[in-house]
Length: 380
Image 1 (cartoon, one colour):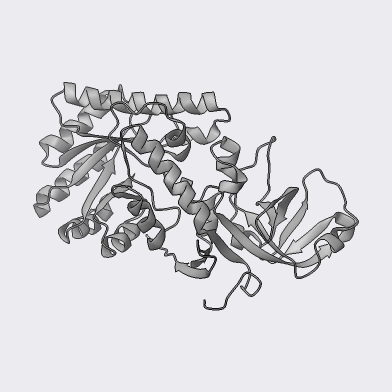
Image 2 (image 1 turned 30 degrees about the horizontal axis):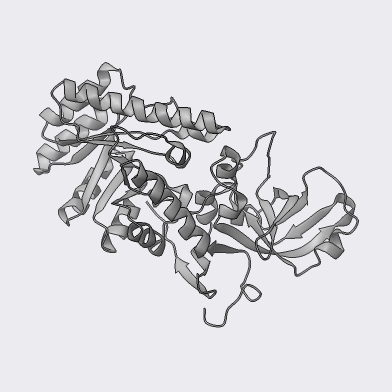
């Protein structure tokens, strides 16, 4: 990358502002530590070793992954304390066991009797003791068992009596992405905390071990006022932030570290369109901001320096074409003069995880002002 700059980068490119990212890392670290818990960042957003290394250097303890491929790559890089935060599929138990037998302190998750029994039977057959957390549903968003259910205790007994190590409970308040006010975010954070802590209390009252209480989403982590009873917090997208997080209200555009650098390739003057060389293959098809109050299409547009151009968004996209237009529908007769062919622009993503996944590496603007390249990886 020696001698490279934004003017000479091939587009589209995933542009990462390291200074902005480091601010985001520090903000989350101070928030969680200040409330007395450990931060176990979710590395699925970046899938990039230099990013995770900076999170750990800032004080994070352990990492969270969403695939066993992530666990393998980060373990090979020297990160041993890993939570695989997706309920384990029985066919993946052999892969998880192999990682653990290499020295990885991998923890897995279940939320059904079938999965718990599979863990127990596999462990007994292979003389292996898995470390397991039970996923708790604290918001009706996706997976997990209700904290007051009999199923919670049944899972705890199945694991504990079957020879697995019952590590604790975990939850993810995905419904926090639907909140739009500080009060709603704080209420959701407290709901997440209190219901997960309640699940832990019920397990302990039943004579079952439950040392760990793990909660987390970026909105609730940044909005929590208390983490009493919680041992660790997991959050991921905060490291980059995105337009969804801006819409939720936990960041500003200046806090979005990832953007897609693109080039103007043409115009449709009668329609008020500017065409760029970044379509949905670069931005992804995620329309997470599809909200009547703030719909950015496939992304909000900034100039090359990263300053938001108010009201301009990628309203629609084809595979390799992005169509920029004013959100109020006006036809600007001077679009060609304002954005001539060859102009470099940046597009802020709706969902950083999905946009990052379109690229094999990040073009990183470093603290020293240089441009370098960090690889990211794929696979399950």
